[in-house]
Amino acid sequence: MSPSQGTLPRPSMSGKKAAWLAVAFILITVAGLTYVKWWPYYGKALKAITDHTIGSSILTGGSESIPSPSWQSAWDYAQAYYKAVWKAAVLGILLGSLVQVLIPSGWLLRVLGGRSFKSTAIGGLASLPGMMCSCCAAPIAVGLRKKNVSAGAALAFWLGNPLLNPATLIFMTFVLTWKFTLLRLLFGIAITFGVSYFANRFVKDAAIPEDQVLSAVPAEDDRPFWLRWLRSLGHMLLNVVPAYIIAVLLLGAARAWLFPSLGEGTGMTILTLLLFAIAGTLFVIPTAAEIPIVQAFTSLGFGASAAGALLITLPAVSLPSLLMIRRAFPAKVLGLVFGSVVVAGVLSGIIGSFFL
View (cartoon, rainbow, N blue to C red):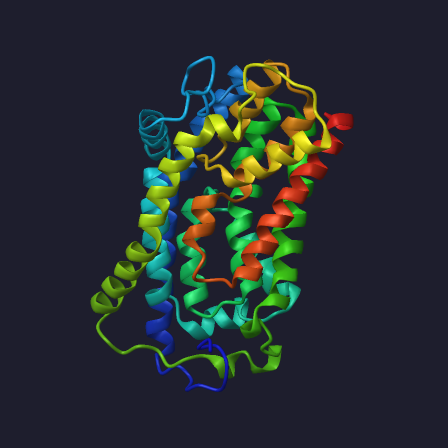
């Protein structure tokens, strides 16, 4: 049974202390995002506007084709991937652990604890400043669930980070075209808010009536802050990092199998489009890496269908990010998310064949 079920003691933390802890969390978040995301993306946005590119496709690693499956291929991809995301990954783990010890449970449940669309919407909107990939946002989503935030709100935060990333949408407009941006925005909104809200139906602890949310707040842990934080950080590292590392290596080795036709060009059938959508949903990329990947596919003779599918599926989720959150959500929810992203990718590919 989840801690959020049943009536538990109200938190004993004073309002003043709670406010200071929340301020500390906000300051750490703003400082971290400024260093890892906001300032670097300002320079990348200027490059996208002036040069109409943000770099080469990480799939090929600068080569003309994807390397054949091998341990060297796995190692090379992992190096390129972690070089791009390690700062954001560290920040995500840090914030995922700190949200459990700095933000009072009552505050979070008051805003994000209900099953209403309002909580889901707030979770999705809260993701916009983060601009993280699905793997880097996953530890924060896990931390929110540990504080008994509703499944819909936590999912909306997790999915909104990569799909509604304002910086990526800016890059996309200048590198690809506004049509790609519009398609991404429409499907991103549908997945972030629609799928997340629907996921509440699969989680029992999401069924807390709005007027009883605060009665489900657990008593705050009165142990020293550093002890609570180190315990939270330790659990986060143990449950998140190993699956993350192993899955990235495996996908790096298998990328030639997931995208076997790169460099040859091919016609798009519904079956081919479905395979592209599944491969894009499983594969893992850094933030905004889908833009040069889509460029590479279209330049090699693939139609707009493949571009439309990968535009949605590559950033939305990945096998590593699903493994990272597997203990925070029921299997039904993860299945719903995976299936919804694949279907959205197929639909985006179909629409893209006429629109892009």
